[in-house]
Length: 165
Image (cartoon, rainbow, N blue to C red; front, side, top):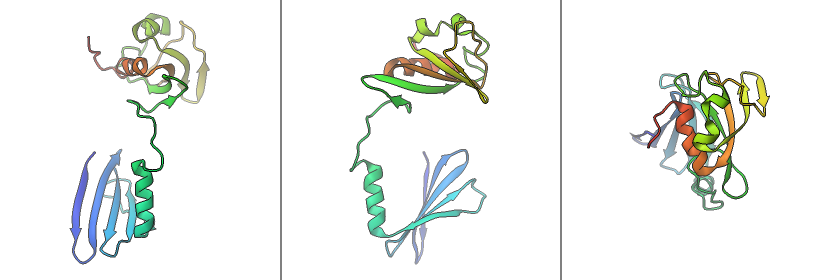
């Protein structure tokens, strides 16, 4: 993640943070302690103000974001944690994925990573409990369940990245 810092003489300091898809979060911290938060959809777009916060409110928001009030379970992915070590995760199949064009049975997902594909979203259609003859297409979103290590192993397969041996 890239953060750009700029001095604003007589005003304070500006921070621009790349947040993906060319968008930026812009935070202006005034010498008075006031904070202004803006969002830019692209580097050349005008910034839209999201909110203004006092110094005290900014510190409260910051401590919440930092984890002072709640510390989430640390995982190596962004799926949904279930009881124990079980994770429900969503993966989009890339065109260069080993899975693209294969049926679930041919792909040997269960044997290779031990995850279970519980659903496939294909556009507006949801295929629940897909069988071994269900073909995986580029752009499909696979909903899988497994342990943290299993879903991380599966991630490289679905993204078309080489797996480490």
